[in-house]
Length: 222
Image (cartoon, rainbow, N blue to C red; front, side, top):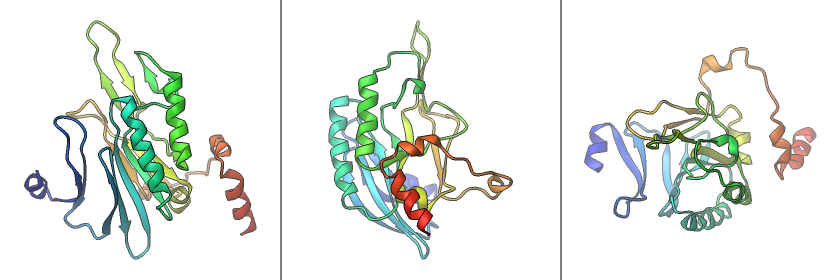
C-alpha cells in the first residue's frame, strides 16, 4: 500500500492497520508537504499528528470510529486522555459513526440517547462541531424495499483554540464517488474569493459552549 500511495504522490505520515476487514486509519501527506509532522498519539480508531510550520502549530486527529457502539466508548476515553496532553489548537476529522440530532438522519431509526451520549462525549473533551456546507448528509445507503438511508456520520470537531486560531476555517462536504461516504475537505484558510463581501455572522449555538463567557471576557479586555 505504501508503494501505491507513493506512486500517486503521497507519503505515509502515520498508519494504523486494519484488523481483518474493519478499522484502520491512514494519514498521508503530499511528497511536497513543507510542514513538520510528528505523531502525538495512536489508537485503533484514531491517529493524532502535530503539524508545525514557521507560523503555526496544531494537532489534527483522524477518526474512524467503530460501528459497534460499545467499542466507541474506548475511543472517547482515549481522546479525552489526549485532550489533557494537547496544548493549543486541536481539530478532528473523520467518520464518528454517530449523529448528534434527528436533523442528521433521514430514513431509518434515530436514537436520542445515543445522540445525546455522542454530544456529551465530544463536549467532555472540550470540542465544538465546526459544521459543514454544500451537502447535509455524508453517508448514504439504499435499503432494499425501504426508503434510502441518509446520515451525517462524518464531521469535523475542534477545540476553542483551533476555532480562534483559524477563524475562517471551513468544512466542505464533497460529492461521493466510489464510497458510500462523502469526502470532507478541511480548509484552515478560506479561498480568496470566499472572503469577498462576506459579513461576520454570530452563531447562537456558541453561547451554549462552557467557555463562551471566558472567551468574550478576554476578548473584551483586549
